[in-house]
Length: 287
Image 1 (cartoon, rainbow, N blue to C red):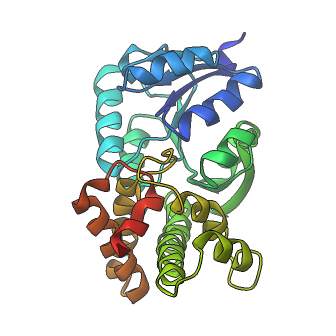
Image 2: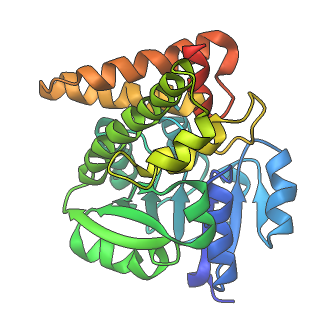
Image 3: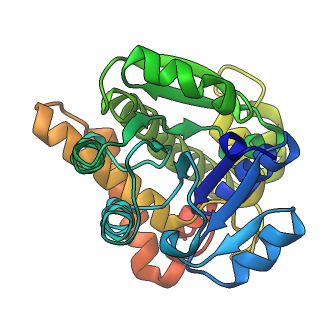
């Protein structure tokens, strides 16, 4: 297998591993990087080599990043710049880290000769597993074009801008809606219960009508289950994402009262000890 088919995939968690698996299934030699050792066996079972740090991974022409937070991205870039040669590499940042973070880290990588494409994704774990994500790809047109074939294995590539940061800006809007829709679903199902209705019956009746949303259909069934429901996205992720949205809104002067209310619900859930539980457990803040 040629070196041009080698990819380093950083962040092989709930959404990253199925994405990396899509590449492995399509003939790429993938090395997954994750400090969580338990993820390594899952990666190997999917035909993916694993390393604890990017400094331990074989050098590849393409680095795909699916870390969780801006701080993790900063740490990753710092480690790469200190221990590896990024010159000539293409870094595809697919995490949700906000416009400021991706611009700052891109500048550091570009100063050392790397190409950076800003390509956050939406669609969740289910669509990552089937290669049906939506990718908001931004960067120099020729640089986005160069990775479009690779990105197509993850889903539909939507070109959203010519500057690094444009993709993250679109994702901020996306996460505003996701944040609000999950909390709205939780509030509505709690309302159903307080009205003496069966929540499962209400979910079935309203999810296919005008009041339906993707988040209601996806998270609603998990909201009907207990605290230990399978985790596909944590409360902590939406504490982080809603904070990114709020920060971007304040910086731009936008008013986001609905987002601010949703953000408080995620923060309340985290204070209740639900930080690492599935984000559907925000419904417990209505108990």
